[in-house]
Image (cartoon, rainbow, N blue to C red; front, side, top):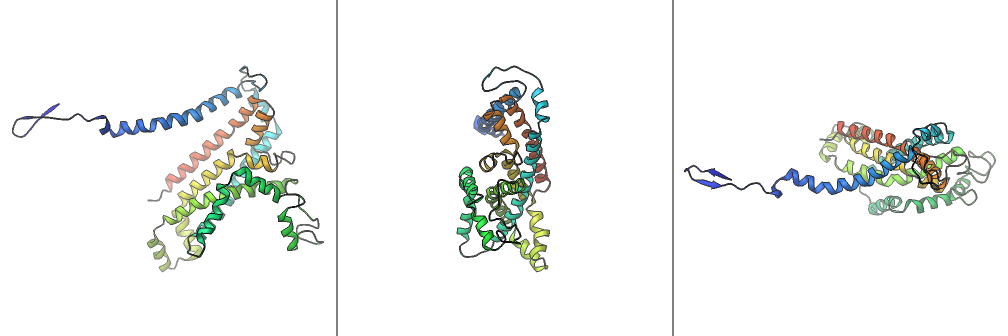
Length: 317
């Protein structure tokens, strides 16, 4: 290409090269990641839909479509209804507990004190350790005979003596009674998610300008008032992200329930992820297992859309 100079002569113009087209280059650079993620998620998702509309089993992998029969049978299954209720209960209760405790921990870790690095290291340990190993440790702590939790409760007089608050029996059957089993699973879920949520909340608190906090302190906003009126509104997007990740991890995790209770007692702690495994893998009914797993998709998609919308509305400028 050529163009005119001021003196009337022509000069060659260079056509923009491939590397100068930022938009096209960005699309090409991100394409492998998009293809990989689409294949990793899309192919299993399409297979789950096909399986849920068929009668395929581990013994007979022939794909014969039967329509919505699997979904009708699942909705009539009382165990599925219990699992669906427990999934939402465990997720929202444990994540709410995590958000509250992580805010307290993050606020404490913002202060300067001796040994803070060691405290941060210990808080991160549950997240770095494999969840199966950590849950096996909790399985021992919930033992009906040798539980150290029961030993502590007996030592302080809350258990094992006539008139004790938790009863005169020497041990609590943590995983054998429905209410105690639910509380046990929620506690382990919260213990597992607490480190990640604490780190996220620490990042949010660190992003608040120090000048703003000092100005609020000069105006008389201290302690609880400063937390409610300044730090929580400014870190609400960060809290939303922590809440979102916590829900996703809790909805899709089956390790805690599988190791601790296997859904017992009498399916009282069963969740969708474990019931999918028991039906589809251990029971060999791949079609019903796939149909159960599909109920997780609208719940997770709805939660993700809601949390991301909330984060955009409360974006910190």
